[in-house]
Length: 369
Image 1 (cartoon, rainbow, N blue to C red):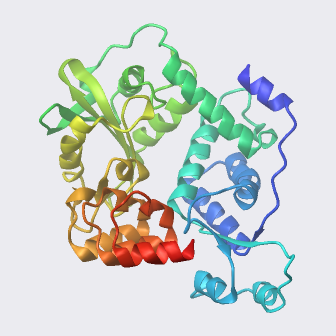
Image 2 (image 1 turned 120 degrees about the vertical axis):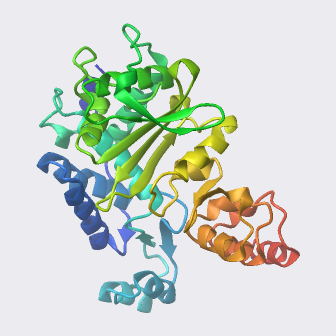
Image 3 (image 1 turned 180 degrees about the horizontal axis):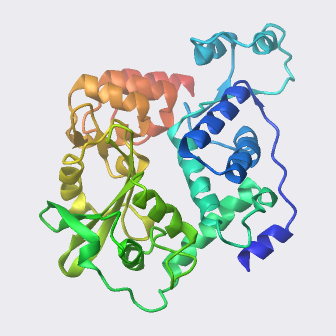
């Protein structure tokens, strides 16, 4: 019913915006789609609707989205590639009334997270009445449907309680409050155990369109990826197999893991009392570099040699390296170095609000206001 209502509405127009690196953006979207092995319809949808949405409406803090104010900034953003001639002409013959020019980072965390959400939505439509009709859904409608469905997952109770199947998981790491288990990809009870996880956690991991056969929907997307060895799934559980944290990790070609999601109940951050165990478990895995948003939100970061609480990071070089990629972590630092303060002040000064910062940094910000 929701799908029918959404599709009956006129498609919202994609807003116009001059984006200097639009061809690079479209190329990056297509390259990631090919690497994932997206089907032709999904690949075409991303090149059409997602690309147009990103160009016209995508918004995120710098450096994900930046307004280009001068020629030097444009050259720095395109470096080491040469600046397109039309961009150079724009600033050499700039009109005061001309439209703003924008730069959108092709692989920012915010853009990749939005793309992953939409790919999850598109894959969930396989085997439904919308299969073969995705071109009729624009990006805003897809995001609205995704949000409505995930809200419904949390609100409705399962039709019949799912039982826990111990043979579908294996214990990996013992913590103080529970055990981290891994879902076994070749178990015939994998999907039933995923449904059990979702039943207790109220998220989409094991939400299947056919709840009797455990096929289709969001669950199909995760189940297939796990069964094919592209994704590893973990659950942190206390007594009576009670789940508290669900983790998904993408398996790279060399076997290393890119932590994708770390979810507490109802997709909220895991509760604080489990953070120590979570940190210990992450350090037991063969993880690649990169800190997902879910980890940053609770103050945990991936450093070159370890995972650690951001509040524990006192080394000046580690502070700068982390803040360079993720400026928002400054709010977790106990004592951010002066260099980190200047770095954040130059990129996202609003993150310094309410923090104790050096007088010289504060005066510079006040002078800018």
